[in-house]
Image 1 (cartoon, rainbow, N blue to C red):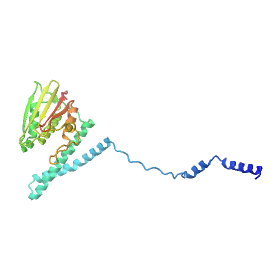
Image 2: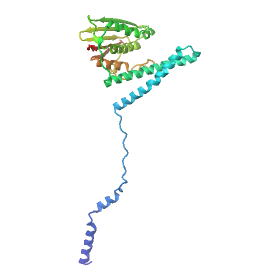
Image 3: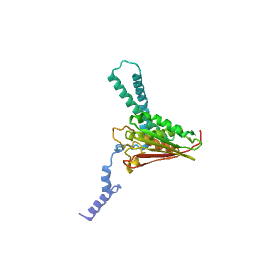
Image 4: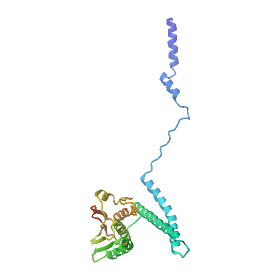
Length: 276
């Protein structure tokens, strides 16, 4: 090959590569997808945060309460009315009444706790007689206590003037704590209730004679849906959580002292508030 022919070949090679694409670029261009046909990656499912989950559960609870109330109402009506119902039929209706009653109680507790956490419940103060309050609570739980031959002892240390507290919420706290004490106390035992009024606050102690709690259980006992008992003891795991939430709403604190085998002593205090 002459020098002129070689120069022409090199010149042609350079002209072919002068379009601005190297060999590597040409290969990349061939692999590029066609316009408008780019594949999109599938979207990952969005994680549901705790607040969204809570809202969903609350909505379901609201929707369930109405039909459960209807079922419970009809069951009570059928049992109270003078109708020709067989003994087997009455037994079925009674079971239906009990199940619907327990389910309604669970829903109402959950909705109450949700409202407290949302901040939609307020404290309404009024002068409250502590002795009358304790008598009313023990009378409310009298039937459950008598089923297990449990007796209540009440001791109240009060000042001259009745404290100004939210009586309804204080009653709910005591009801949950005493109900829990009766539930886990052995038959024939005693539950002690002590109320102490001091300037600006009221402290309560509820002592049972149950199996007690270990250190780890004591740390978790006020958490929602916490249960340490066997399945034969009914409970939602919300009663103590509600007691804690209402106590803190009332400017107080709640705690438990317990030794396994020696029962549990639940204590709480609430601060006095202004009358409304």
